Image (cartoon, rainbow, N blue to C red):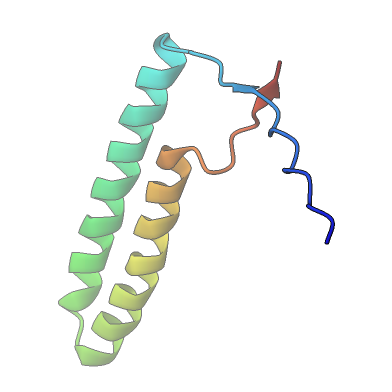
Length: 80
């Protein structure tokens, strides 16, 4: 029986290290959007049960989207 060769090594990936003002601005923008989302949701909660449920469902999706953007899931990787 013939033996299989091991798979080729994956390509090396380098991520740019951008620690400048743009990163700080992005983090502050994330905090601002998070606070705004929470405040708008709290206001909708005061309007009654149906607006509260809709606001909480929407806020959950918005907050997860902000989190995923901050994790860098959509960043491009530069191959070496």
